[in-house]
Length: 329
Image (cartoon, rainbow, N blue to C red):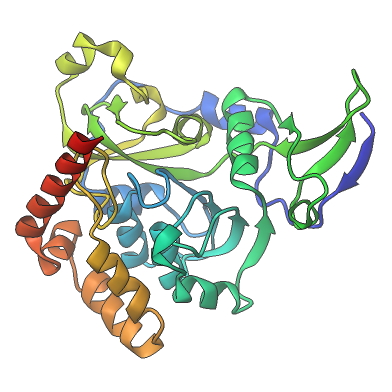
């Protein structure tokens, strides 16, 4: 295949499917109880220097509790897939967790505004950045899920994003047309928040999946955080509703309200007041350090964090708001 052009960006992960297959071949796929505390799961499966993938979409179904715990445990020098990444990016930037970033949608919290802390960190010179589009990262995860080194797409061509990416452009051997080759992305570890899971890791979620199904298949280690645990008998009664099968999962952590202050579809709406507080306080470095100390480092877990910011009363309000919005739809 004739390579016509290639981007200038750094490829942070190895797209070789045989090397990934060697890892997956030796991964324990036994149907055993994988339930553990989130603190234990992060300590066991998330390491300095790993490449990290985070599930969800924007501030929807994002594993915020896990992001807090990663910062709380002081992880550093990680790679990060900034794919539709909003508040999770803000948290990880605040902890300076990553030093390599595949950037698609980052820094912005959608209509809420831009994260000063994320921008400050990216402009500090401490982070090596390679650019992609959201679709580009989606295709990269799909290539990994399919066990191929790359997938072709008609994306990025003629843009500065291609120039800043690590993609290559080639001539199609069948048609002679130009195609962009997007390399497979195999994260070392990923965290995905779901509505329900059994003790083995069979997981269900509602709402849009975006790339979570491919992320689950592509990742070498997978931590599931769940709003609630359900029985395996319940899973067996409706096997077609299982989105992520147990054999992909390494840890199951029951974390009620684990996406707070983001939205969990059909469960609770986002805490817009608290997200605005994050965006406001992160403009002042000294105030932000105090804010992080109080909201992350001084909290032993996510339950403490929620208690600090309104507790169950606030969560009942957010649940009511989400149910009313669903009824209007």
